[in-house]
Length: 351
Image 1 (cartoon, helix red, strand yellow):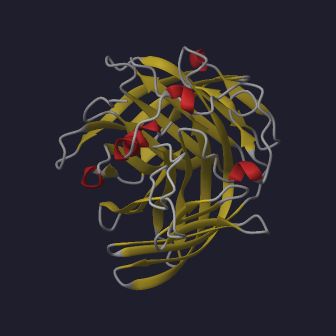
Image 2 (cartoon, rainbow, N blue to C red):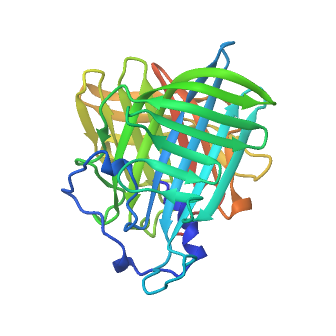
């Protein structure tokens, strides 16, 4: 879903589509290897979002995201500086006390132990930022920004959730428009944050999206909406749509895994996003449907899921690092909480 960050392709010699490993149905995921990097694919990401609670009972949202993009072919070039992979990372803290995001980002070419996405298991480092999976299965991340820092442990409490058909997730009408995609919902979070120069212990729940692909979005797509929800009863709900210029759905889908572990894969006709209350950014002028209602067809019938943001201003402006403007924020729904992402609302994405 986050193919917008292929902006990193501009940093090196472009590769033709045939130079990347294609996404194909029927591929069997293997762990822990698929927690690690897939350098022969065009791009991939490790996307952690979640809710935190301080000792004083304050509710906060957080995002830690690492991206890897293959941007050039270093074959035949003996230089250690030959550009082949680029790493990009975002971190953000949603704090209602501030009423806006605190945000930081990093970008670097891979190499020299300073920027790496390792194969075999989850191990990412980008300068002083990191996301690593330990032998105990717990993922630990450390990031620092201007005015905030996160030092968190994310412990799995459920099996990996394979999205789509066994991890093959279609993102458009052409079956080639797809990704390999799995989710780790209901992560138990512990650790500490630093804000305003003060360290605080936190606990919470989080969600990890892992996705890799070699294809771009359909040319008719201008953006997408994505929603990942940890339900209070232990269930997990994933919803997304890819939008056309007129706001209609070019493609949609997702999944629902009940507290009992029963999985329902959602087809395009099963998911409908309906805009309700909107919020306009005074900084960028973009208008976002920050409180949509999503209609989901499940085995028991159609369920209406009204979304409420932790705060309206959770816009992330990454143009300073060559990225896009988008909305990524903590939200609640009846019986659950998670994160909502909305892209392409300022200007259509150019892929």
